Length: 154
Image (cartoon, rainbow, N blue to C red):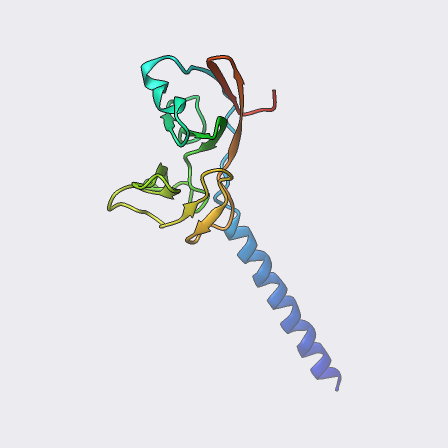
């Protein structure tokens, strides 16, 4: 009887250890925060798509998000997300793009769809694929014809 009890405890400990390892491996794709603060003039040609509902632009560079950002006009409420897909973030193809039909964000573009994860435009939450967490969202405020996008609350 005591041997069965001991066996149960050993199995329980191994199962819990495996669960802990599983969650640790799923969380290793987080990326460190990148502090940035950019201003976008909506009247300039490179920002023109943002003047229309459903319009979007990419901003890339060393100091703009982890893999750049995508800014989307959701009925004059602007949202910004990091272009790093939260699933295997360090993969070379793990980058967020607007889908061809402008209905969702997706990991990869064209025939190079990487992990095939898809995300809702307004919230960045996953709608399909292996990604189990949303895109990292940034803060956007509008002041007249300017958008300020930051990695920290304003």
